[in-house]
Image (tube, rainbow, N blue to C red; front, side):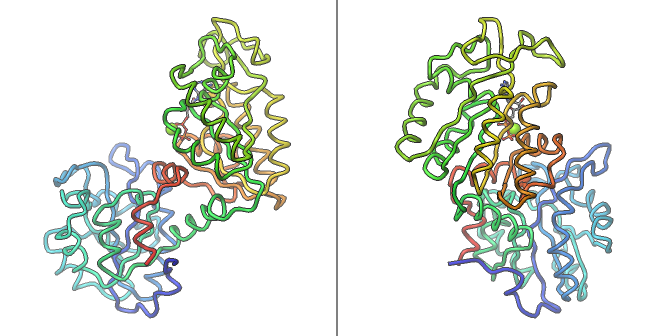
Length: 394
Ligand code: ADP
Ligand code: MG
């Protein structure tokens, strides 16, 4: 089983195509403050318009909870979207949508109003699915970031109309398949971030799939504590040391090597550029906090990556927002980027803070693929089936 793409969609001249995109952009003072998500839609929307389709973009915007909320109208995004596309874009309200669509011509593009103005969107209500479906002939899902939700516009429509993956969706699925679906081994995973508790399912899934599990960030402290290391005032979930032990045992059984740092950077205060010590993990004083992994660990991890063919990365190795605790994340990210450039590593990363950290390291474009999908990326790393993706596999 596989999914169909725009290569399989045939002659679409004059065909009305409902295209699910992610237009959920941040706003400041009534303006779009970051158009990354809008740019991600251009390949699909422009291609379909160029091929003569009538393109009807479906998206949610904010959390209006099933009611029309003027401040969450996609009318506010239409002008910025037209700028990004470099083409005219109409806005179509839900009232009279069918009449408005009937006046559209080949190659026209419209943004339909916020799908979450209907309570049935998040409930995946069949009546709403039919109402949406009546506006179009075909359905294209191009919003991987919304695919972990079984909503009317993400899952329901894919079952109601002939369904295809858009170009951004296709790129994301292809990259994820290369990273964890059918990767070239050896595979390394970097898992960092604040807490073990938010990434338990990720860790459990990865130990059975990767050859090297590199644990950094605050969550490494819980694993160190499980091994009897005194972590002082570090962020640490002491109640999860048993779980950390289980994960390390499961890794052993699966032949996955778990890498914990053996040197760390500590401070007694958490503020920019405080006095720090770089020490062995066994030397943390009672009043100190581990805020980054150390340079010796980073060098050893760089050597691990040199012997790997695939890397999947979620979570920073230290408290990267506060220098100098970004040093390990930046250094290892640059190593991974260089290996990717050499062609020896396929590198895929995702997660809100991870993307910010990679950009801070100046390597956001140097990885094979960086997912901006947030929740959907994490659910995929947990090995879960995403309903919006599953519905395309028919
Ligand atoms: P992502 O958004 O990429 O999934 P997370 O949200 O899980 O990543 O984790 C990012 C957060 O983890 C950052 O705010 C970072 O400051 C924090 N963090 C990383 N290492 C530490 C540490 N040693 N102590 C405290 N916080 C840390
Ligand atoms: Mg985060």
